Image (tube, rainbow, N blue to C red):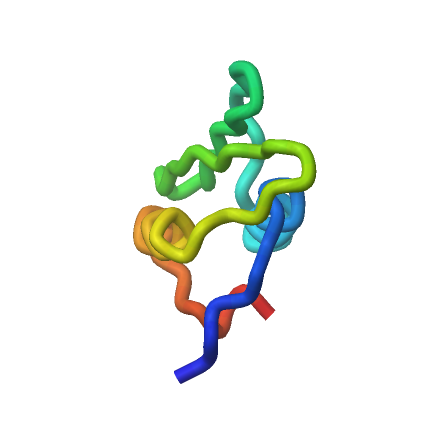
Length: 71
């Protein structure tokens, strides 16, 4: 099983965009992304901070992607 990469918020947003997600709202540092098929998640984009493993797993569950899809 692949290990979780250490990602910053803007890196995760970029990966999600490559999978068809678009930013539908930005409120403060939180970017809301939605896929045309209805999947939705919120990613915090804080300068210089990496996303914790628990939050990253939650985002992956929300968008129905696997750990391997992050690469």
